[in-house]
Image 1: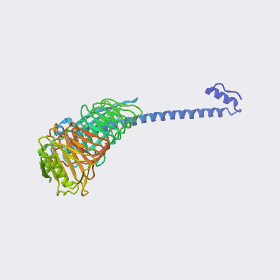
Image 2: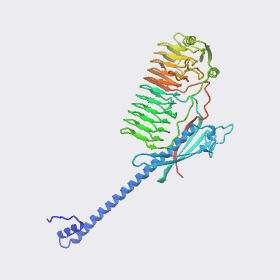
Image 3: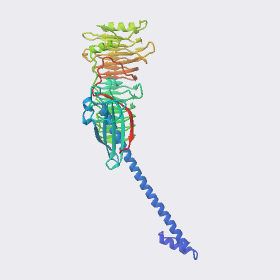
Image 4: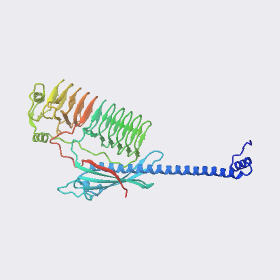
Length: 508
């Protein structure tokens, strides 16, 4: 057989013609043409399939970024509403929000969002909302708001997507965090903080938040201070969002189960740390492999600051008068030893249980320390509140439980008018347990030397508000919203934002 040295199409035809029998030259030519046509058709089809796939992928990516921008606008509106005041609602500046999100990587783009807000004075919301809100005696603030947020890429405006959300607005209760530290918060190993329902065990820190070593927080973390940062390392896990004014740093196997938001700083991930939701920063988001961000990354984003909450003030006289007005029996004392005798006489072994709720007020000129000794056992029937201008110390192996299996509260309160130079600390020793359904409320405005210091192996249900808080190893707490007669009214710039619905609507 003759060897083919030239593979061009013309040589192929010549070769076929030379090897066909007489009268069969046309059949070979037609066959070659058909082969060529099929090959060309397949090549053209493959090209258009590839072009279509590329175009579809581009459209899909722009639509995803558009909906993320719209969602960012919704979240920003939630934040604005949480920190609104009556003056804010009545201003036209509360009616709209705009901003942008810049993604990173080889396909970096900028997505913009435009938000409009309408207010309602009744529930269920009906008719057409208005903005700004016109207050009246019967309706001093709106009770609902409708948020509409559109996100789009300037390069693909036709792929605009719009989110809409209706929310109920109510003045936030003052003590609505599981842990509130007015300065720093130190967390030891093996912390477990759970919510009473879903992930509502929030932590609010007015300076720096530092978390490490096998900690699980069933809620959000807010760090609103202009100089505040959030640092998560080793195996610290926050189930919801971390929202900080300053930097957010993750290392080890730390994880944020929701979004990470740094409104004025940057976000950094190293080692095997991760963020399940989006990472948004006014600066940059830096991810060092193998660290991961499952959601989108937004650099140089326009972001709101975390909701601001002042430390609630519980004054001395108004506090105990309000407890009495809600059914507590007042027991004034001038020494810590007398107060301890009362409490052990009601709830200690062999004690005579009280017939109702008891309030013990300790008022001394120099302050004293109410101390519960090692291995104290209390069986609590009815709730107890202790208000002192001194300190409180609970030694190790303390155990308190409900005498009748019903929910009761023990409140330890150092009023905001206390001279912290003479006391004001709440110190808990090792292996202290408050058994559910018993709950506690710890409150002190003091910051030095320890304010609220919790020893290891602490088990509790309740709430803690302190000028400074230190939690040592093996801290376990379930958040229970406290009952605090005499608490100040909800501040004017703090509202609960409860989502009725959130949905995508037609951009038109």
